[in-house]
Image (cartoon, rainbow, N blue to C red; front, side, top):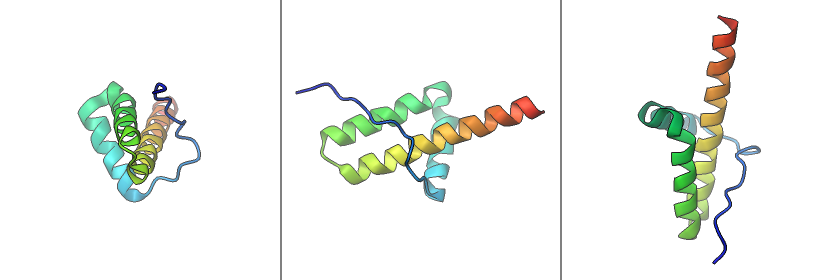
Length: 77
Protein backbone atom coordinates (compact mmCIF):
# COMPACT_ATOMS: atom_id res chain seq x y z
CA UNK A 1 0.00 0.00 0.00
CA UNK A 2 1.48 3.32 -1.02
CA UNK A 3 1.51 6.20 1.50
CA UNK A 4 -1.33 8.69 1.36
CA UNK A 5 -0.48 11.89 -0.54
CA UNK A 6 -3.27 14.44 -0.15
CA UNK A 7 -4.08 16.64 -3.12
CA UNK A 8 -3.74 20.38 -2.83
CA UNK A 9 -6.95 22.24 -2.01
CA UNK A 10 -6.57 24.61 -4.97
CA UNK A 11 -9.28 24.20 -7.54
CA UNK A 12 -11.97 23.14 -5.12
CA UNK A 13 -15.15 25.23 -4.84
CA UNK A 14 -16.34 25.47 -1.24
CA UNK A 15 -20.03 25.99 -0.59
CA UNK A 16 -21.51 28.08 2.20
CA UNK A 17 -21.80 24.90 4.29
CA UNK A 18 -18.10 24.20 3.66
CA UNK A 19 -17.23 27.68 4.96
CA UNK A 20 -19.38 27.09 8.02
CA UNK A 21 -17.65 23.77 8.67
CA UNK A 22 -14.26 25.41 8.09
CA UNK A 23 -15.03 28.08 10.69
CA UNK A 24 -16.01 25.42 13.22
CA UNK A 25 -12.79 23.47 12.55
CA UNK A 26 -10.77 26.70 12.88
CA UNK A 27 -12.52 27.57 16.15
CA UNK A 28 -11.94 24.10 17.58
CA UNK A 29 -8.43 23.36 16.34
CA UNK A 30 -6.81 26.71 15.54
CA UNK A 31 -3.37 26.20 14.02
CA UNK A 32 -4.07 22.48 13.57
CA UNK A 33 -7.23 23.04 11.50
CA UNK A 34 -5.64 22.20 8.14
CA UNK A 35 -4.02 19.07 9.55
CA UNK A 36 -7.36 17.95 10.99
CA UNK A 37 -9.06 18.43 7.63
CA UNK A 38 -6.28 16.49 5.90
CA UNK A 39 -6.68 13.72 8.47
CA UNK A 40 -10.34 13.42 7.46
CA UNK A 41 -9.34 13.41 3.78
CA UNK A 42 -6.86 10.60 4.39
CA UNK A 43 -9.31 8.51 6.41
CA UNK A 44 -12.09 8.92 3.85
CA UNK A 45 -9.73 8.25 0.94
CA UNK A 46 -8.56 5.02 2.56
CA UNK A 47 -12.22 4.05 3.02
CA UNK A 48 -12.97 4.75 -0.65
CA UNK A 49 -15.41 7.57 0.17
CA UNK A 50 -14.80 9.89 -2.78
CA UNK A 51 -17.70 12.19 -1.93
CA UNK A 52 -16.35 12.58 1.60
CA UNK A 53 -12.89 13.36 0.23
CA UNK A 54 -14.35 16.05 -2.03
CA UNK A 55 -16.35 17.55 0.84
CA UNK A 56 -13.32 17.73 3.15
CA UNK A 57 -11.10 19.10 0.38
CA UNK A 58 -13.69 21.86 -0.03
CA UNK A 59 -13.58 22.46 3.73
CA UNK A 60 -9.78 22.58 3.53
CA UNK A 61 -9.96 25.12 0.69
CA UNK A 62 -12.37 27.19 2.81
CA UNK A 63 -10.00 27.00 5.81
CA UNK A 64 -7.16 28.25 3.63
CA UNK A 65 -9.31 31.07 2.22
CA UNK A 66 -10.49 32.13 5.68
CA UNK A 67 -6.87 32.21 6.87
CA UNK A 68 -5.82 34.31 3.86
CA UNK A 69 -8.73 36.69 4.42
CA UNK A 70 -7.94 37.04 8.13
CA UNK A 71 -4.26 37.58 7.34
CA UNK A 72 -5.03 40.24 4.73
CA UNK A 73 -7.41 42.03 7.10
CA UNK A 74 -4.81 42.10 9.87
CA UNK A 75 -2.28 43.66 7.48
CA UNK A 76 -4.77 46.35 6.43
CA UNK A 77 -5.78 47.30 9.98
